[in-house]
Length: 77
Image (cartoon, rainbow, N blue to C red; front, side):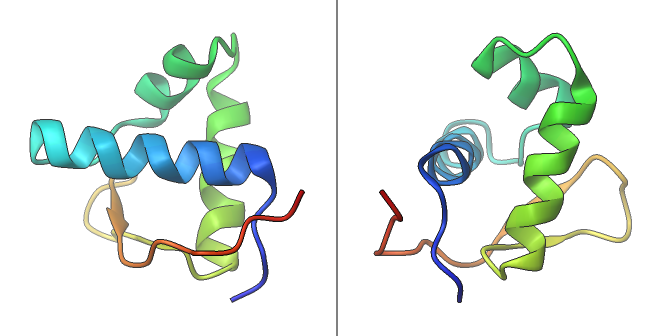
């Protein structure tokens, strides 16, 4: 898996924590709100990049669902 940027790692950590606490992945709106982004598109772009890097898999059943499958150990500085 390609290394994640610090922001990508933060988004991934939020997804993992949210899923552990709520037994479901966060919506893009919840991700955007957590990071103070006014645009849900910013959250969507981070989610898509995490999926492209193989850190998460997008659930095809729900367009807002994210399923965590891998937590990287290396974070690009």
